[in-house]
Length: 223
Image (cartoon, rainbow, N blue to C red; front, side, top):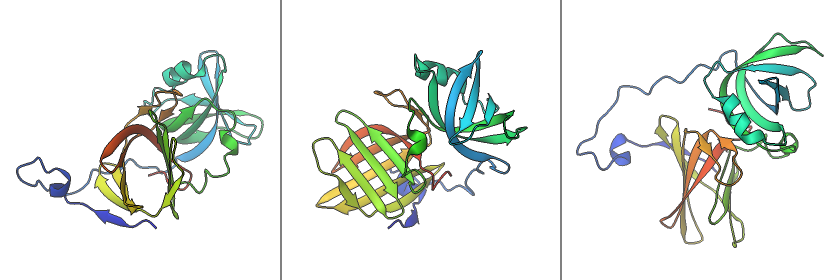
């Protein structure tokens, strides 16, 4: 099960000669009036339309949050033309059968997929992370995390979460004589194989061996 602890700055930055304490964490951007949705992105006449999963309505995407979604979608779409997107924004001006607008504030994930809307595990997922060379994936829920690595059986373990500040955190466990850590930071990350965009970087550490990757929140967490 997850437990949350807070680390002091001294523990996090041992290279500093002395600890520096801050009065407070920077305020998180307000999410009042914003909605998170998943759906399909389609380019039409140099603009992007967003259609939520299992919904017939369309929303013209306005990139008010400076996410560079037009460039990201153009580089990903290729011949397929349709992308899956997980995003947060202000949806307005739409009724059944009409077109509205979404003032986009945050991208969680953009990828080439026609099946992501039907993912049965998305709503219960806290976090997904993955990397390559060799391939690995970490799926995290409230019940624990499952590590999958190329050439090895899946490893299901409990974990402890440590909040580091500035949106960064790590997940840790000791299992089968292995020390496993997943370090996550809020920084845009492009998958080196699929080209998909995710909103966080990830670093997997197993017994001191480090692999890089990308991560995104699932449906049960979006802070």
